[in-house]
Length: 347
Ligand SMILES: Nc1nc2c(ncn2[C@@H]2O[C@H](COP(=O)(O)OP(=O)(O)OP(=O)(O)O)[C@@H](O)[C@H]2O)c(=O)[nH]1
Ligand SMILES: [Zn+2]
Image (cartoon, rainbow, N blue to C red; front, top):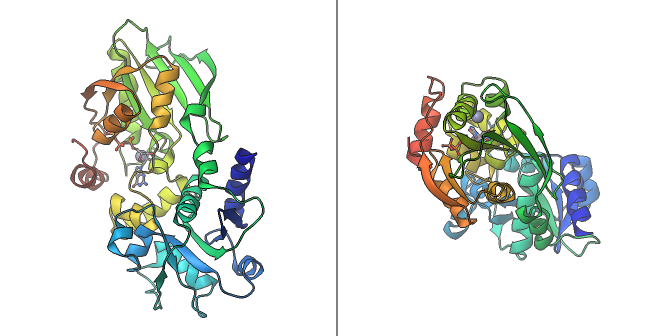
C-alpha cells in the first residue's frame, strides 16, 4: 500500500499535482502553474518550502540549517509572493539576471521530518526541491518511513543474466537488477573469469551526456571505456552501471547545474544553488548489487575516497583503491580541479 502511495506521489510531482507528506500538503513549484496554485491554495496562505542550501543562497537560512543542505526551510507567504516569485525562489537559473524582490522571512518548520522527506521525494522525482506548503491532514499522506522503505536497497533483486560479448571481453556476462521503487534498472557487467581473488570493481554512475554523447565537460565517457579495458586486463572484475544520473539528481537537474556552470558557478556550487547535496547518490545500492553477486571483498577503481567509505560502511571490504585517471581535456580541466579541491578526489 505505501509503495503505491509513494509511486503515485512521484508521478504527481512530475505532473505538478499536489502531494501530502505527513501533515503537510505540498504543491511542487517547478511543475505546477498559477492555476494549480489557485486551486491548491485559494486563500493564498500556503508558505514556500525550500532546501537549506537554496535558502542559504537566498540568505534565508540560519547557520544550523545551512550546515545540512537536505534540511527544509520554510519561507513565510507574503501577499505579493505569487507563483512567478515562487518560481524565482525555486529555480536559480534567473538569480543573476533578476535579483529577487523580497523581503522574505524564514519561519520555523513545524514538521521537520515530513518537510525534509518531501525534499527527498522531489530529488527522487527529478524535480526542483521547492514546494508551496500548507498544514493540514490529507487523505493518503505519506510518511518519511514510506519513502525510506520505497528506496531501501535491501529490496533490490537480480532480475536476469545473460552472456554479452563486448569489445573488452567476448565472454562477458550482464546481470540486470530490479528495485522495489520501479526506477531505472541498474546493471552489472562481469568481465573475465572469477579466480578466487577480489574482483576489480568500477562503480560508474550514469551520465547520458558523457557516456553517449561524448561530452567533454566531464570525464565519464573515457572513464567508462577505460574501466572496461582495465577490468578485463586485471583478469576479472565487475562494472556496475548505476542509474544515478547527475550524482543522483537526475538528467534535467544536472543540465540545470550545467546552465549554472555556464554562468560561472562550479559543479559543487551549482548543485547547492539548486538545493541539492553535492553528491546525492546512495552507494548502498552498489553494495547490495555486489552482495547479490557474492562479492564482499573487492578492489575499487576510483579517485573518490567517499565511494570507498560508503561501500565500507555498507559492509563491503575494499582491500585496495586503484586510481582511475583518464580523459582530461581543456573543457573538463576546471571540473576535475574542483573535484580535487572541493570534494576530496585524489587526482
Ligand atoms: N550534478 C552534477 N553531476 C555531474 C556533473 N558532472 C558529472 N556529473 C555526474 O557525476 C557522475 C560521475 O561521477 P563518477 O564518474 O562516478 O565519478 P566520481 O564520483 O567523481 O569518482 P571517480 O570514481 O573518481 O570517477 C555521473 O552521474 C555524472 O552524470 C555536474 O557538473 N553536476
Ligand atoms: Zn559525465
